[in-house]
Structure formats: C-alpha cells, structure tokens
Length: 460
Image (tube, rainbow, N blue to C red; front, side, top):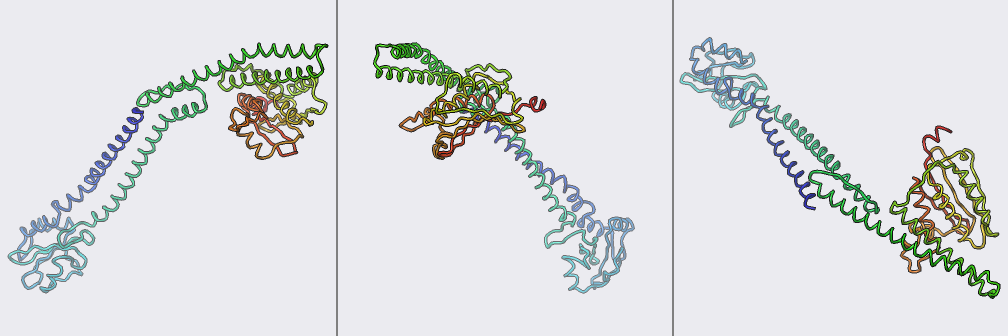
C-alpha cells in the first residue's frame, strides 16, 4: 500500500510545516509585541540617553530650560549633588526625597532606588547628576535595567501565545482528523462490507485512488467467486432433481405394487420419504445460496400478515398433520390489520420451516402455536411449541451455528439442517430480526420481529 503510506507521509509533512510556521509566527508576534517597549527602553527617553542629555545641559548652578521641560514631560525628576553630597539644584524633586547624602548613601542608591524611585546617576566634573524615574517604571539589576511594563507583559504574552498555539494545533489536529476520516471512511466501510462477503464499488480520487482500486479489485474477485459458487450449487441442485425424481417414482411404484411384500413396501416408503427430505434439503441449499449472494429476486407486495398466517394454517391442515401434533393461531388485538411489504412465498417458507422444526423435533407430539402481536413500532410473528425444548448450551450453540454448515462438530449434527439459516436470511432481507427462546421440557419458540412502517401507524 505505497499510496496509503504516501498519504500518511503527506499529512505528517504538512503538520510539520504547520508547526514550523507556528514557531515563526510566535517569534514574529514577540517582536511586534515588544518592539515599542524595547524601543522606548533604549530610545530617546531611556535612562542612558536622558542622562547623557541632562549632563550636557547642566552645570553646578542649574540646568537648561529646554532640558527641564524634557524632564517634566517624561515625569523624570533630577538632582545635582556636589562633592559633599548636598543638592545644588533639583527639578520636580518629590517631597520624600532627601536633598543631602553621605558617601555611604550614594554608594547604596547608585545601584538601585531612592525612596522606591529607580534612579540613574552620571558622574560629572562638577558633581553627581541623578535622574529619578516614576515608581514602578523600571526594575534595576546590577547589570541592566528593565521596565515594569516589560516584566508584566512577558508572562501575559507567553500565556496568550501558548493558548493560541494549543488552539491552533488542536484545530489543525481536528481538521486533519476530519479530512482523514472523510477520505478513509468509505474505504473502511467497503472493507467491512467485503468481510461480509458482499460486493462494493468505490470511486475515490487523489492519493487513495490505488487503495480504492485494490478494494474494487477484491470486490470483483469476491463477486466472481460468489457467482461461481451460487451457479455451481444451482447446477448441482438441477442435476440432482432428475435422478431423485426417478428414485421417488420407483419407490412409489414399489409401495403400490400388490405383488411386493409388506417389508419391501415399508423399505420403499422409507426410501421415498428420505428422498423427499433430500429434495427439500437441495431446495433449501439453493435458496440459501441465492439469498446469501443476493441473487434471489424478491417479488414484493403488500401482505396482510394475519391473512398469511390463516392461509398457511389452513393449507397445513388440508395437506395433513400428524395426529400427535396440533396447530393453533392467535391474533392479538390491534394486529389484525398489520401489513408488510415483502415476498409472500418466502415469508410462508420461513413460517413453514419453523413449524416443521417443531413437528420433526418432537416426534412424541406437541402443540404448535402461531402468534401475531404488535407494539408501537414493531410487530412479531411467534412460532412456539410445548415440546422438549433445548438446554441453554444447545440454544447458545444454535444461535451461533444455526445449521451444520457452520458447525465444527465432527458428527455434523443435522438436527436443524438449513431450515433455521434460511429463516434468518428471509427475515434479514425483509428488515427484521430473529430471537430464539427455549428451556428444557418447556418448549421452544422463535420470534420474528419486523418494523412497522409509518404509513401503517398513521392508518391506525
């Protein structure tokens, strides 16, 4: 799957480029955010520049008017100390700032503050020039100085940038995931469909084109194999009919031959009955393969379920039912007018398979009941008997392996044959589900559940 690898590599490369772009944006944002602050801290009004200008414009007796105005505009106070530590002149000196200092005082404030005012000094030939900036405007370190505005903005800036980065990465992840899912979801769904043995057809362009083509190729192979398998089963079924009909015909002639002994007639009848079972098994096998490979056309029409059940019971009673068995039908209130759009022949076949299961698996006799019930959104066809039932283990095995073709038992238990599988497939193609219930010596029931269409609920 080289194309799939290229597809993943492309997304990883795109993500890496986005991360690099994000880092570049972060650096650019930092420069833009702090450009003005840095320019101000080291610009015309910075302590270094202002000290130099004030030193050039001042003397022991005073400072120029122009420089004085510049200091006042920037809220900077100034003071000039002589060699004895006394103030010779000052500009906007705060009341709490002393006007005389000892040598020790000068040594202390020269690296820091005077009354919490960050001060910056310049030694001249006439004395010591001191500039005091507003409180909380600069923080002074032994090697450099930084404005409080910068210090306050740095953590805020990084918090904002981290939040932005996380949000951006999440959006990239979300959009990438969405795009990958949109591109790969049809492929995954098609693979799941293929795993069920059903054909698919994918139409995808771009990087995953080769993957889609591989899936389509596998689908064509599976479809061809299914077609061949179904055709083979159909051909074998057709070839078996002729010799089987001959066997059944000769067996009937023997049973009707007046010269044949009773023993021979009984054996011929056994051959005829077993041949009928083989014929039914071949028919079931053919129908199962057609339904499994979606080759069985459905002749759908609107069917009134209560009428279908009554017709089936009447036909069964007319054709004969063992004296040890009985069949009854119950239509619950509200279920009389239930209809279903489906294939009447297949639905009758499913009901007949369930009834015949109850009859065949209870040779000592039982009562079989057909029940039609409904709820708000579904209706149920229940076929139940009061026979020997099944153990929980057998019921679980039957639910997992509804016929011997799916059994790994060496004995190939033919207890349920293909009948139950056929019922399940007929129910599936009609949009329904099947539930099995049984307890030892307490009977067995199969519940076929179908959705009620909106038009039916409206008519109710």
